[in-house]
Length: 89
Image 1 (cartoon, rainbow, N blue to C red):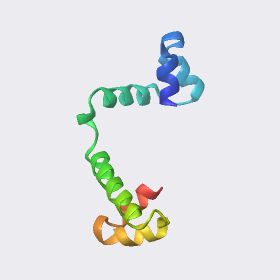
Image 2: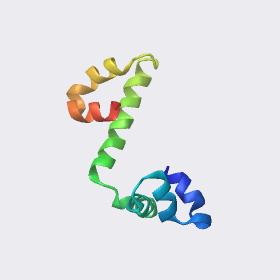
Image 3: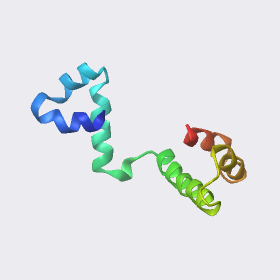
Image 4: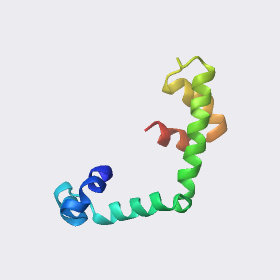
């Protein structure tokens, strides 16, 4: 949705698009701020990116056949239950 708003904001404006999509304009503005200054991203975002690398490594080491449950079990000792659960969605 944020991409749609960014692509059409010049023609329609951020607020009218957000009203139609039923999202807060502040969502779009904060996203734009984070994109402009990646260092301002929350610490949790950076930790999740590191965890993403670990998940990818476990998956690659096991010939990309491990499912979410096996990756979960292998990472539980390393990353902690809630971080893995949040990343798996």
